[in-house]
Amino acid sequence: MSALPVFAATSSHLRVAVYARDPARKAMLMTILRDGGHEVSEDGDADVLLVDGAVPHPGHGVVLRLGDSAGADALPPDAPAEQILAAIGALGAGLTVQLREGPGFAAAAEPRSRHLLTPREIEILGALGEGLSNKAIARKLDISQHTVKFHVESLFRKLGVRSRAQAVVKGLTVLSKARLEI
Image (cartoon, rainbow, N blue to C red; front, top):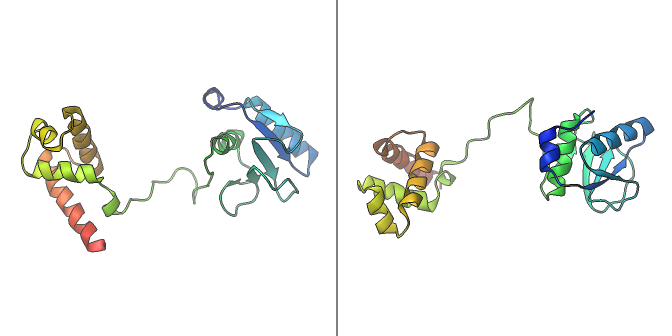
């Protein structure tokens, strides 16, 4: 099996120790890691420990479990090589690995409306409600016109609108709902 070239190009070289009861399974996991550009360590002195099933291993360090579906930093026992390598890279970078519920990619949960807009975006929205131009908003808030443009585009994207008037109307609706939720 070979790793995705994109992942191999973007991941750093990690030392990974593999713990598995089945010698054939251990050899397969070691091959996946080597093909992914990682060094396989025979001892527990590694950046990441890859543990297949319920097998004894040193209790220290960063651990990726295969077959243990409980909690974070666990993958199913039949995880493909690409998923194993991505998880190893994420753990090596200090991130947490957690599987989504259900098959494939699911839509991200909709953020609560009170967290939708940043405080600066709310200021920009208020200035839009006053009918100010980007230049006038920049002067009022003591920021660059480029920054104003960035925030206006962010507002349009977050609110799903295409004009300043639509942004003001929808923004007021979102903000009033947020106040009711608090």
